[in-house]
Image (cartoon, rainbow, N blue to C red; front, side, top):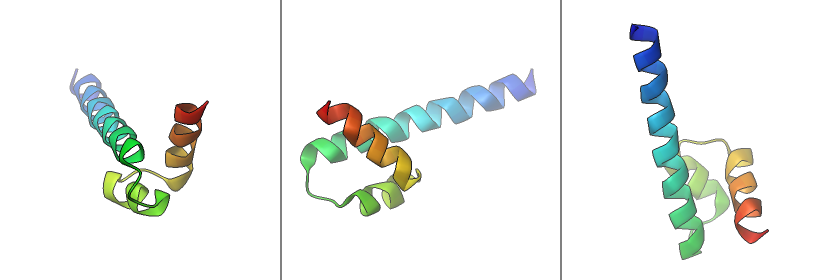
Length: 55
C-alpha cells in the first residue's frame, strides 16, 4: 500500500509540473530551458508539451 501511495504522490507532482509548464508556455516569456529548470522536468518533455500545444 505504501508503494501505491508513493506512486500516486509522484504522479500528482508530475501533473502539477505539467500544468505549470503549460501556463509558462502560454505566457511565452521564458525560454524552454528555463521552463524545464523551474518545473523540474527534462527539456525534451517541455519541448513535447510545446509541440502538443501548437499542434
